[in-house]
Length: 112
Image 1 (tube, rainbow, N blue to C red):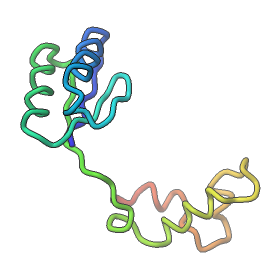
Image 2 (tube, rainbow, N blue to C red; image 1 turned 90 degrees about the vertical axis):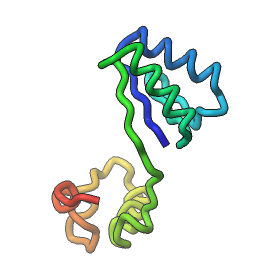
Image 3 (tube, helix red, strand yellow; image 1 turned 45 degrees about the vertical axis):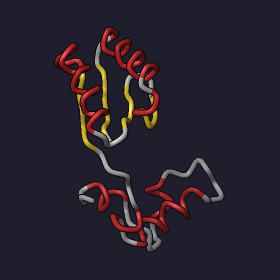
């Protein structure tokens, strides 16, 4: 997929118009950003937008995140346990202290 991010009002307006006219190429819209499908036509649309608005448009190629391929089990388990914690106001660092869950500092420095 292609992620198109806009940084000016004019570029946002152009992205909104592009998304309305070419709904078949749009996977999801986020206001100042949109995900376009991975087709040559979607790339053409994104490049046309960037050509019109230069540095106010950023285009990135993305791929769906698969947590079962990209992450170890302990991180997935920690996310699940933290989401289902009894006291919702407990920050993750306090929640993970004294458990087998990975500490936040260890996760911050580790690349996917």
